Length: 244
Image (cartoon, rainbow, N blue to C red):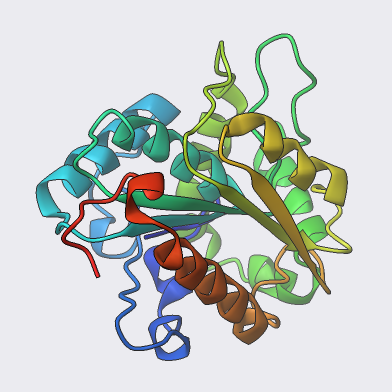
């Protein structure tokens, strides 16, 4: 289950299925207010967004292993959804993959860098994150389409300061680019504090959006971790005994 970055949409994962082995289903979350959900109101808080996604997953999930992957803002959303799913032991949650973002920070910790609410600051921040793809923001006709989602998502992130860091009972794999200007490698290592089941870090060549040029290598790493999880004894993973 894949969670997009701020301003992103489910389509950012549209070609992942072709790069995963048979038996692995890739599903992407579509946040409200974009693409086929353009008319839906944006979520105003992280809790609202995570609650809504969790409710859908609980209705739709089959009884089979589930891993979550989130990039940038999607890392925080995936973490919050994982927290909620752990309250439902019948959901066989196996691992959280996070990308391009450090662990959640509390109200008394230094917040990760992010823009203020002005359009100019948001666009400057995006140009910093993705210099190669920044030309799209110079097209005036596109700004009325993309800016509402960006304003909503960055507003949600500015307000997201959980009072306590909940430690998940599943392993976490943190991935990132070696030249990410807003998420250095030490921030990826911070996810070790968010789990009781161990964390590992995998660094790829590239900037904040390393996962686009490094897609094949990233997915190979993800699928190797998934295979490792399913090879472990089921009672250690908390999975139903009927799973293969």
